[in-house]
Amino acid sequence: MTTQAQTLTTRFEQSGGHETVTYAEGIDFLKKIGARSPLLHLRTVGQSDAGEPLHLVTFSPTREFDFAKLRRRGHRILLINNGIHPGEPDGVDASLLLLRDLVMGKTTLPSDLVLAVVPFYNVDGALNRGPYSRVNQNGPNEYGFRANARNYDLNRDFVKADSRNARAFAQLFHEVDPDVFVDTH
Image 1: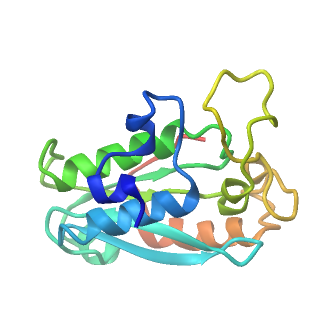
Image 2: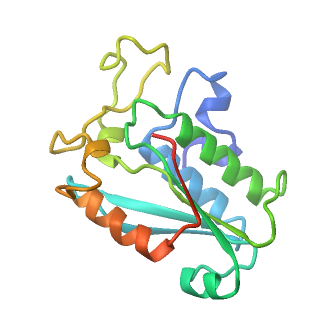
C-alpha cells in the first residue's frame, strides 16, 4: 500500500495541490477506503485497449449494489466519469476526496442517492505519465497523457466505440442507467 492509502490522505492533499495520484495509487486508495466500509463497492467493468482493468466504485447508503434493484426501490443514481484525459486530473482527485469523506462520515448524501464513479476512464493514458505533454497547463507536476494505448482520444470515441474503453463504458452506462451523468474530463 502507498503512504497516501495508509493515511487516507491523497497525494493531492499532501502536495498542496501540486501532484495527482497515479493509477495504482488511486486504485490502492479506493481499496483501502473500501475495506473500511460496507457502503463502498469496487469492481472491474471491462478492459482498456492495453488490457488494463477499468473500475467502477459505488457508494450506496443501503449497501445494495445491484442497480436494477436500486432503481426499483426508487433510488436516484449519479454517475461520475473521470480521467477521459488523464492530463486533466481534477475529477480524479475530487472523487477520491469525496468517496473518502463519505466513507469516513465527514459528508453525507441524500438517503435515496447512490454514487457511481469511474475513477480512471483512460487507464492507458493515466499509466503514461510525464510533465511535458501539456505545456500550456500550469500543473500538476506530472500527469497522464491524453491518448490511450492505441493513441485514441477517448473523448472522441463514445459514439464510434472503436476502443475497448468505449465498449466497456457503454455496457456500464446501460447497467448503471444514471439519472445524472457527470464527465469531469
